[in-house]
Length: 118
Image (cartoon, rainbow, N blue to C red; front, side):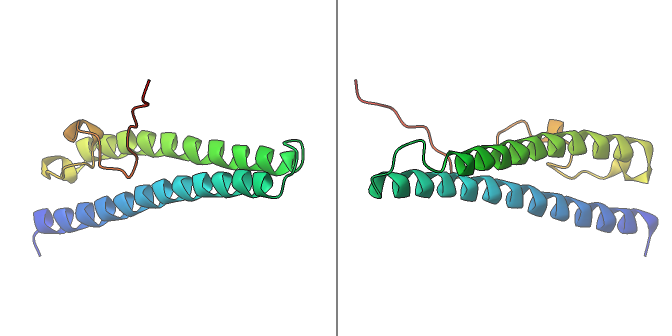
């Protein structure tokens, strides 16, 4: 196998793993949001005061903040990988999305904007 083919194979594996990790983070944030919704609706359905279970909501907020911080670290990871790419034999390999500057269009998510009726 040629060095360029080997480099392309390695870079492709890294790109796939990076994308899977990012999708996992998105899924985790989505699930934490679903949990927040379930806790709120459950407390309301049970007729409990908003003061009941507040430590659970506080812990959930910390978990959500940690996930958002992890997403920020993934953006930094993109920059670090782009630096490695530029300093190695991988610099000539074109992989869209590995370097965030390669893909300025936001990725598709399950989030949607909702307009409120006035």
